[in-house]
Every structure is written in C-alpha cells, then in structure tokens.
Length: 278
Image 1 (tube, rainbow, N blue to C red):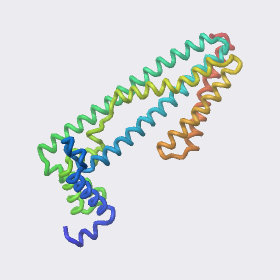
Image 2 (spheres, rainbow, N blue to C red; image 1 turned 60 degrees about the vertical axis):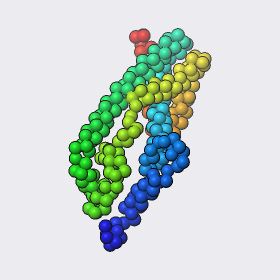
Image 3 (cartoon, rainbow, N blue to C red; image 1 turned 180 degrees about the vertical axis):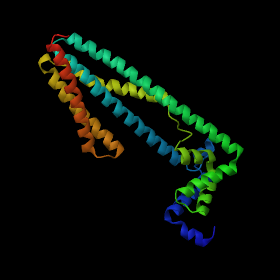
Image 4 (cartoon, helix red, strand yellow; image 1 turned 30 degrees about the horizontal axis):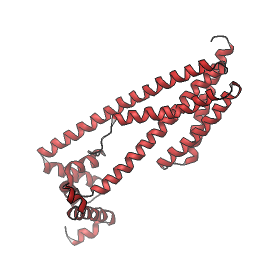
C-alpha cells in the first residue's frame, strides 16, 4: 500500500490496523507463563478472554434480574388473587403459592433450555459450515470478508488488507465474528441458561410467598403489594444500569406493570370470592 493511500485510510482504520499489529507483536513476545505452560499464544487472546468474561457475567446478571422479576410479578399476582378470596386461609395461600412456584419455575427453565438449545444448534451449524467453506476455498472466503469490510465503509485496498491480516490471525473467528457476531469459543450454553432461569425465578418468587405467609391476615395483601413494588423498583434500576438505559423510565415501567398485575388478580379473586363461585 502506498504512502498516499495510507494517509487516506483515516484514523479509525489506522487504529484498527495498529491494534492488529500490536496483537501480533504480543503473540511473538507472549508472557513467560504461557511459554512455561507450553500453551500456544493467540494474538489478543488475553483481551478477548477479558471481554468474554465480562460479557458472560453481564449476561448471567441480566438473566438473573429478568428471572427474578418474572418470579416476583407472577407469584405475587397469584397469591394476591387467592388471598383476596380469604386472606385468613393460610393453607390455601401456601398451596397455591407452592404449586405456582414449582410449575412456573420448571416451565421457565424448560422453555429456556429448548430455546437456547435451538440457538446453540444453529450457531454450531454455522461454525461447521464456515469451517468447511474455509477449507474448500480460503482465497474466496478472504475476498468475501474483504467485500464485507468494504460494504462497511472501508476502501477496497484497506478492506483487503484488513481481511488478509484477520484471516492470517484466525480465519474462522474473523468470519464468524464479522458475519454472524458469533464467538466460536463461547457458544450459548442451554444448561446454564435453564439453571439461571430456574434459580432466579425461585429467588424472586420467594419474596411475595414469604411475605404473604409471615404476616397476619389483616396486612398480608397491602404488605405484599409494598414489598413487591420495592423489589420491582430495585430490579428495574439494576436492569437499566446493566443495559445503560435511563433508570427512572425502567423503574416506572416495572412499577406500573407489577401494580397492574396484582390489582387485576386481586379484582378477580375478590369478585369470585364475594359472588360465591369459590
């Protein structure tokens, strides 16, 4: 590439190419610990592992917040609806809550397992297909990668250089991350998703369940309302903080939704209870 074309590349592209060169230099002078262990160093592997670790923690935390929120809203609505018929019937409230928690937590975890398993199967097939394409026609795949970078705004010469350097480093990873946003070393885990959904739902549902059973019949419903709204405000704030969204808006949405769910089920229980249908 000529000096003039390098000048026209622009600071963003020059930064990308400089980072690729630094990755390669770090691979040559890898830490002594890696050499002692006999493990081959991959360019930028430490940075990628840090990114994966952070992304994994955030995904687990997001899943936990969402699962807990679902457990809070669904079980509190069920308990308030049953308590509206007869708040002094502790046995009926306990039976309804325990049954609801068991069925809903299992249903959520199974659904999460099936959904994520389908996603993982799709990702696996993409990885296998792309690996086959690279073995059959590496030059053609490199041209396709260059065309993709060119479609994103790079000049043809810069796109070819980026595609070549990325392919020399790790062709499979370059294609998967650029074309499909898939990390071949970090595919989704259906068991982890199912377990996270199950545990977080149990944790969230425990709040309204224990609040309803621990207090006197006269204050069960209002106390559960208050506890649930406080918990929803907290989960809304945390979920917005994780996603970088406005906290107040997220909290208000959850408060309105949770209050509406409990009010609706309370109305149904009160209506059926006073009409003698239950």
